[in-house]
Amino acid sequence: MISCNQLSSSIDNLLYSDFWPGQFFINGYPVLNIFWNLFLLIIPFWLGAGLAIYWRKNKFKKIYQKILAIILGFLWLLFIPNTAYIITDVRHLLDYCPRNYYQRVCPEGAWMIIFFFIYASIGWVAFVFLLNQMKRVIKNIFGKNISRIYIWLIIPLISLGVLLGLINRWNSWEFPLCPWPIFQNILMYITNINYFRNWLVFTIALYILYFAGNFLFKERVSKQTKVKSK
Image 1 (tube, one colour):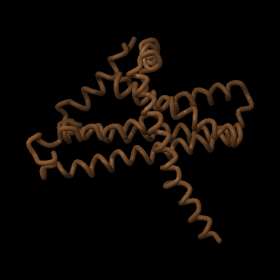
Image 2 (cartoon, helix red, strand yellow):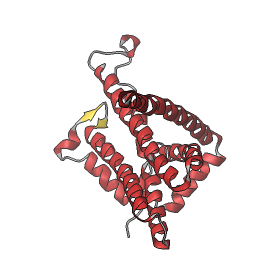
Image 3 (cartoon, helix red, strand yellow):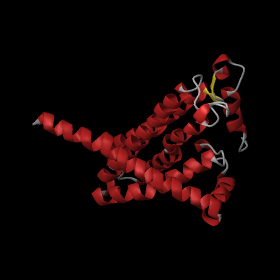
Image 4 (cartoon, one colour):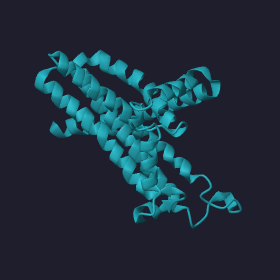
């Protein structure tokens, strides 16, 4: 049986291996990790799209269809934190220049600022897009009011998932393998004031990023589409 750490170790070994793609780093951040994280964004997209198609075909009328829909939704919930997790990779900008440089800006590493900004922005756009994708599915199944409540309930869970990956180093696929250790870590964010503060700040920040992004990426595009159609 696979242990809690075996799968993660095998992936880490690939990212930091002697295989040539694993030898490229940007301020200690493996370039191969970028492609891996972008690949992880595809999983919740296909899960959300698959759930929408499955709903249109059968409306979840039978028990086994409901069970399969719940499984797809749960898998989506496990992988959706990877969108917001990409935003946290801006932390690799820390110490990108020697401390003796004026204002801590150096010509050798100044390009990293715009690189990590664009990379984090991809996570932001994916975060907003994929939440809205699932929101449309929930709206079709449960109605408009439930889809609005969903946003307020799902973002704290996504924030918790991001912190479980960022601080506790858990991956999405490890939950079925290690539910008890992960549950113990989850309790820390309720019982420990430092962990709870991180969770609260991350949650507020993700609310801001979602609603700001929803305005910038969604509502303006829809308005322009309506104007053009007229």
